[in-house]
Image (cartoon, rainbow, N blue to C red; front, side, top):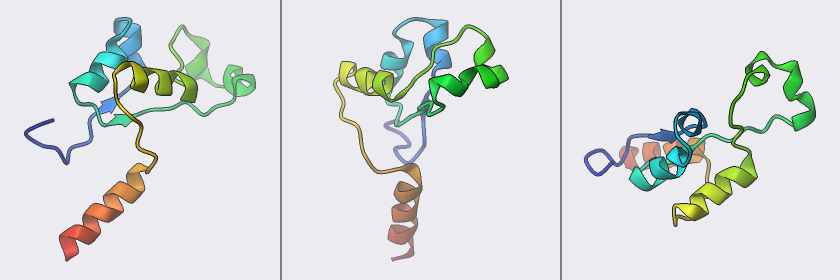
Length: 91
């Protein structure tokens, strides 16, 4: 993270399956992108992905993990971040 601050390093729900608390540790270690599951709970049974045991990182859980990592969420999306980088490189 320090050597390449422009890199995108995601924290993903699979980390939590590997080891409880791993998602928060990833944030503390420098992850700068979180994945949020926006599928409404009523529709999750329709998708094969949700038919096995897994941790669902919905908005509430992601915000709790960010707070537990003593960080603050950025409300700007990745597309806007990338667009700003392109504009600053073009200048």
